[in-house]
Length: 201
Image (cartoon, rainbow, N blue to C red):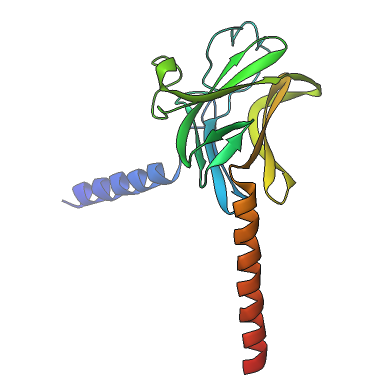
């Protein structure tokens, strides 16, 4: 009986350990979340490594749709409607895909954000696509990376880079005048609250 109890305790302990730890992923999943204008942008994607391979034009063929990462498709969520490289996109979650060529990338937002890779990619589900130039990096980017770099109070660049290539898509609010008015009103409210707090003290 004691042996059974000990075995059960060991099994429970091993199960608990397994829940806390996992085998390192070949292409780690990363979630990027950043304030943007009046809301935020969230990106969930896999990060493959170069690992001595030729990336663009070979591992990622030119002229073919790519998942913009590894494993399940890259997901991007906008908390408000945005101007995505000059085209209006409503708030929501989209699959992010790329069709690379040597000098430019077509960056695509697709309604289907729950697929594995780009194996079931359907261009009929595309919401918008923008074509942006590719710049050569001075230093190799070993792990694929997607970042959001602020360029102003209500603007940012979506930056995608891997190996020796980098591309950027400019992001702005879809209605900048409305955002400015809302921001001004919020600042007024905060000032009123601050003045009220000073009066109480």
